[in-house]
Length: 100
Image (cartoon, rainbow, N blue to C red; front, side, top):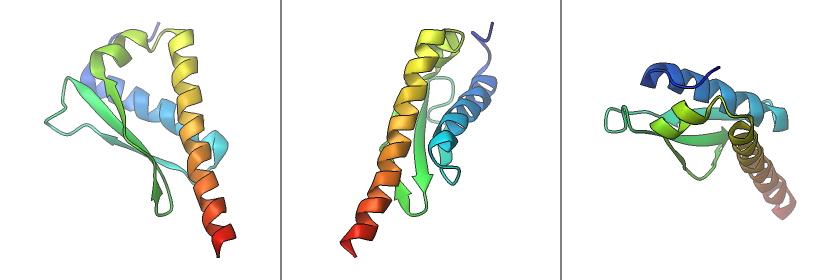
């Protein structure tokens, strides 16, 4: 149903998808997508941000996202990956607070 699409359309879908799953862990988490001209048509780089903390870069190929976004199994795996990164960000803040 959602497979395919142009680069900008897939980018919007990806940002919404990642944001919705990250915010399930903590509503203050923000998603940033690097879709600069050097990536256009080929890939996306995604990071989660919570205050000053930033996750590692998640590289996603455009063709993979476009072809797989209609797959429940692929979406479930990406959702779990996103929530795991979000939980790691939250845990970093907890560890920082305990260290004080």
